[in-house]
Length: 341
Image (cartoon, rainbow, N blue to C red; front, side, top):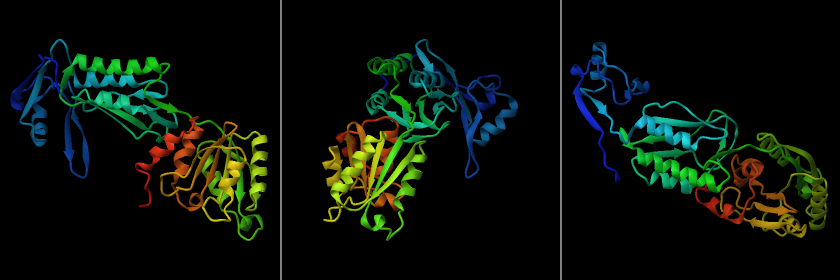
């Protein structure tokens, strides 16, 4: 896929004749089960003492590079691509074995424009790899890496990468196609439905789980209330939580199609704009997502109590990062949405 004329020359030299010459690229040593990493760095001047180590890693010859005027070494190309993508919250490291990594300097949710990543990778001879979109990121975590496949590429190819990113930034207020969105601190109202819990026949186990999940992102359940399986009462309590000014309302239980499960109908009767009742993900297919006067409201199915990862765990960090969930967001959860098999 190299449509540009190349003038760089790679000169093959026997290692015994390479004393005093500079390496054209990093050389990697692999000791199975013990070590994989850089043995010699690009630019290293070969010494006589290096020859046994080169032979040990199977290098009887090395490359010496005479770089063309309009070409870039793999390290320089990877650095320029990484620099184009770096921005607020995203920093790059030094080249290592021809690769430059991008890391987050904060915790948050990574959002990625797949179209830009794909356009860059279609150029050929270069690679841009990222973590999955909407991954929850911790400070210091690697987000992406840039790399050139051969030892050198035409400068124009890297210029094309920079143009693709610049065009995206121009259309998105200067934002990189790879962004870290920090989590907002939400004040949350929690409504526990179910006559068995309301009457005290069983102990509430939903509340502690939900509290722990939201606390992991810096938010807090401010108020928790209990109601029986009565549609009118649930509507009344939802309006109470709305008027209390909470940033999110979570309603638990009673989400199935059984006649005693009143929660979905009550959420609708409260005036909610329902984005989706039903999610193409298992566990968590019975989750309801909607907005009530622009406040996100979710009906949580019972699996949230006992399954460690459900559709709620997909949507919660996005909402806390400030995303407005759409019907299309729900639809796309189906691909890869079978968690428990």
